[in-house]
Amino acid sequence: MLPLDKIKAMIEKVVKAEGIELVDVELKGSPNQHILRVFIDREGEINHDDCVLISNRLGPLLDVEDAMQGRYTLEISSPGLTRRLQTKEEFEHFKGRRIKVRTTVDLGGSKNFLGKLISTKGDTIKLCLENSSSIVIPLKLIAKAQLNIEFQN
Image (cartoon, rainbow, N blue to C red; front, side, top):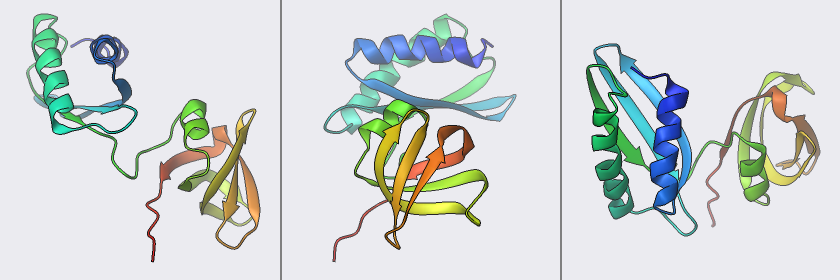
């Protein structure tokens, strides 16, 4: 099996050639039955036809390149409404949206924060929390961040 970074590079070429953004690649499962999950997105929305297109392009390429060892399942999907935010560019893109952040260390007595992403500056993000206070969080201290669905009453 090829290293995951090589597999990801192959996937990115195929996805970009179709005018779609590669959001993330996950490799899960056991050595005899891997699951390769590919998350794609584009301005507007990803639909079922986009997922089928990418699957039809990737499956044969991965097989010909012998990228995966043994049996594997290829899953193509959108990152969903609660997509993970991992890069500075993703945080910048989703400014103004409500996000949930878990940090690796306590900041002001908590590791979990929910609020509106106000800004990105340098290697930090700033959230306006539910109680109207704000917090600046260094990107390197973020264990997990994701969009949070906003319900309207």
